[in-house]
Image (cartoon, rainbow, N blue to C red; front, side):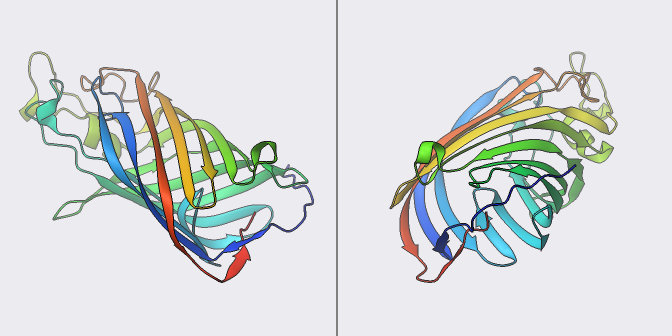
Length: 265
């Protein structure tokens, strides 16, 4: 049964804020790879608290329907490229292209504390992955239901937030084949031909924290996936049953709106 505790209205914040900074990401080249890289990255900070389009601690999304029990919104995600030249496992195969993932998401609000500083949600995003190339192509669907805990203003420190989530991953056959299929043309003695099906794709767990100071935002996150039992686990391209993705960074606030609105919590 869905529960929702009564709470006072959330504090007003600027309609939009813009910042820019830098950070570092560390991750395996793809889920199942036994190689990893670290990348310095620019960190844009864009917060927008509109009635439909929102960009905040939950990412960029469009809200089609929102009430105290559930939300229906647009979910966005992305993946980074992976060069086959840098991988003994994939050498001679096509590179993995970066993707842009988009689709609907249904969020159920299971519980929120009276002071609105703790909340538990069940999130169900369902996204289509599209390669970011000169000729974009759809490579399949994936779903990532998760149980999430968010904590705001930890220990009374305004702007210090944290979150944790865990849940299974699912992908269709087309998505799994993009990452884990070995076509006969690329088969070798050490890399036999393989064609995966759709289904269970592992389980992910993620923890994150961020702190907003008057002019600076800092963050850190760590994601861990286990591929044990995944439908593609027998692929010769899967060299590790573990996937780790983490990052740290900061952004300096450049500008903010004079108009104040509710932060939506």
